[in-house]
Image 1 (cartoon, rainbow, N blue to C red):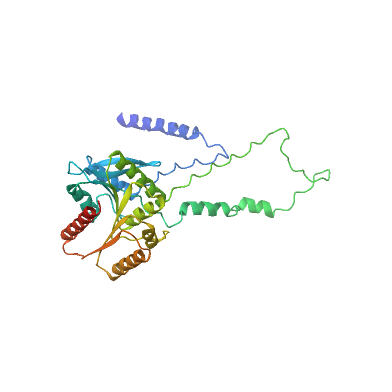
Image 2: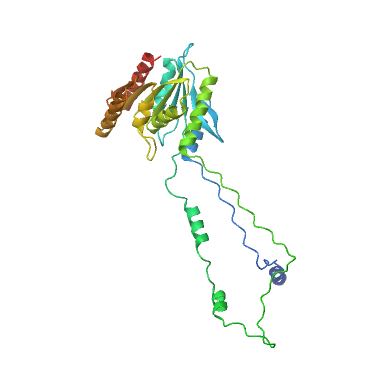
Length: 332
């Protein structure tokens, strides 16, 4: 009895499946396939690092507005009842606002010397490679349409024979009373700001934060390429309340103008150039910056060479802090 009931149930399921297949709604002919949903843009690595710092250091993280984007900075108040001012730190390319070399040790130690610190997270460098998806799309638009077998057969077919009356069939023209809607013009693409523009906007935001803190003195301190961006900002914007620039192991990013030596030569504010004597190329570049400052008679450019201690990074960072603290004391 049980076997007969099972066979009967299976017999009922087969017509139901056939009915469902027969009643499935077919796609209308000529309907374009649905476009896939656009993939969300990947977040920058620098933004991911900054968010991780904000999660680990919530009491120090501040979110500042730079143009149309928000970014994370790390702020520490001075451990002094009469603070001397605020130091804005700009990290090197690929570094975050608490990098263990230069940026992190200085932002944590300078409050003991009476300085507020504000360490910025900088955007990723501009992608030097072209957008491959856009290039492929442009190539597909410029390429001639593919010819199918049906099109080829139509093209190779002899001309249509004349009708019984001896006339060739006339081409069908659209009715005159039908109005064709004009194609909608694509909206102009909003240009993406460059890395230089985004960094300049972030320094603007950092300076606004420093002014809200009523900082008596504002100092820009950059490490690596961050030192170049600090010098470039001061040369182009020339804020009236910034009189000190500190460079640590400065280097110019690739394909950036103007060159670093020209920037430093045109800046007439107190500039401290700190570098580690670890390579011949570093010493040669530092010598060129010093010679340029002498030729242009820079009024307040000083250079400090530090011995590199690769086997003792803690001592290396300690001597950097002490020399920068001493420079700030001599340049109130």
